[in-house]
Image (cartoon, rainbow, N blue to C red; front, side, top):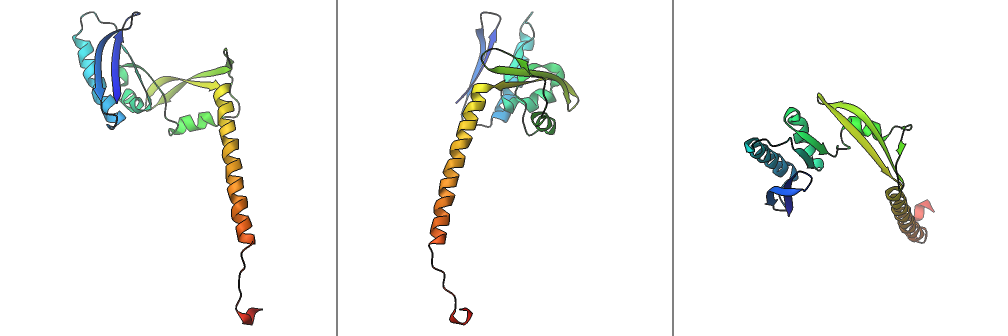
Amino acid sequence: MTLLLATSGAANFPIWMEAHSGNASDQTTLEAAAKRMQNFCKQLASAPSFLYVGDLAMYAYCVKYRNDLIWLSRVSNRISQAKTLLLQPEISWVDLDHGYKMYALHQVYKGVSQRWVLIYAQQAYDKEIATLAKNIAQEATATRKMLWHLGNHLFGCPPRYR
């Protein structure tokens, strides 16, 4: 199940909510919901601008309707500019507390000026490295077993080649 929720002000009082099946497409659901939410917000008298927060599925919609929204979303690492950025060897990280670092930059994608922020978490990195080492060890064990079986298999040649 997906729950879409809009809140207001510092109290975060809920002003709008929609529930959708977990089997529904996030991209389709979020785009349609964002349109309904925009219409709802236009009807509110003296309402402040809303900040739309969504996951990766909402990013394309936010870029498409860039002038009508204030939004925060994750950028897809399938976008070539994001791939290039993630592979840069030298990044001027700003150290934060508790093993976190950040790097902010201005980026233009599909004509939309955006602020992208990379976040690095040492704990997440350590967890990924441990998982990678475990997967490599499992693969090495499986490969050794296969090679042992292959090395202990008798292969027969026709008599004329002996």
